[in-house]
Amino acid sequence: MTAPVIHSLRDQIREHIVDGIVSGRWKPGERIVERRIAVELEVSQTPVREALRELESLRLIESAPNKGVRVRNISAADLEESYPVRAGLEQIAAELAAARLAVDCTALEPHVSALYEADRAADGTGQVRHTVAFHRELVRAAGNSVLLHTWEGLGIEVFTALSIRWLGTRQQSYAEEHEALVAAFRARDPQIGPLVKQHVLGCAPRP
Image (cartoon, rainbow, N blue to C red; front, side, top):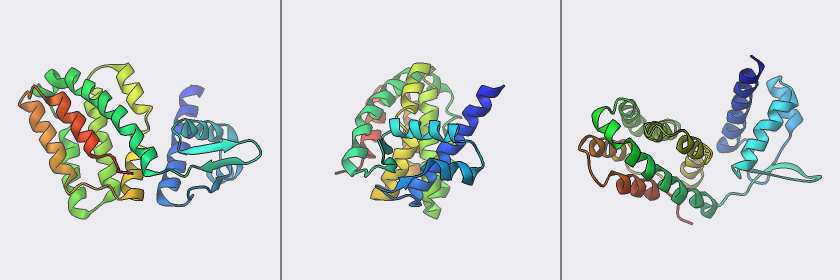
């Protein structure tokens, strides 16, 4: 029973740190003190260390001997690098999921509805959450655990949030773009893979 609890705790700590970076609590170049987070969240330093290690693998933070852990100075070029990789993965996912989603798009539809609400309210947090959730469900529909694991490893939610909040890379309507993808799946569009790829590339920030 121990491992799932530790894993869940690490995820919560990771989310806490990410929220702090995205919201500006920790600014680029600023040090993140492991012990301070542990005291604040009333946890041991071990899961905090694990969460920080995971965020370092996403290139969101960096560590150096005798200097501790700091938030990376992330540029538009850094953020842009992940998008061609993500676009390629999602093209594969769309092609694998096409037959399934042509019959049943119910996993995608609630996020389109939520995006309409977020667009109307100019709710950046909602736009990030439901954009990422839509694409996660698309990748999950491919039924390929290796593909999903690789996609998750790109830190999509983190970099989507940073692109929108730090660089202002907003589309006019997140909902309309995603509704168009649902319509393409339903219509069994033979170009669904390239359509999804272009959609993802169109969201990339420009350096």
